[in-house]
Length: 156
Image (cartoon, rainbow, N blue to C red; front, side, top):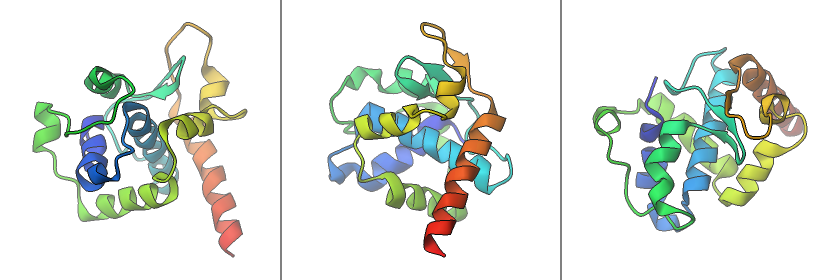
């Protein structure tokens, strides 16, 4: 398992020149990667932190706090956090993160946020306004398995 900042840094280092990496986009990409990883790896965790349901959707709290200094501006450099600096993403996990980017990287943070807020998503199942609650892994895994099955059906 990785620190959420390690996953965000992967996207930052690889796609920084893209010019679309806002805090919201990085937070949502990390959450979406978390969900797909649960679905593809039968409940195995990509990151060591559980997502929470906040006003603005699913959030990894430490990632939010690391990125909030940017506000709505573009993220221009990797997150400096001791654990994130020392973690190395495996080739297999890098391939997986590239898949996430291929599928979702063209969307901005607002669109990714809308994707994670649609009816029936894990966030809508647990979010009570004004309260930050952990989103259960079983809801996330079930949701992303459904997305995965739909995507496989479209390619068949």
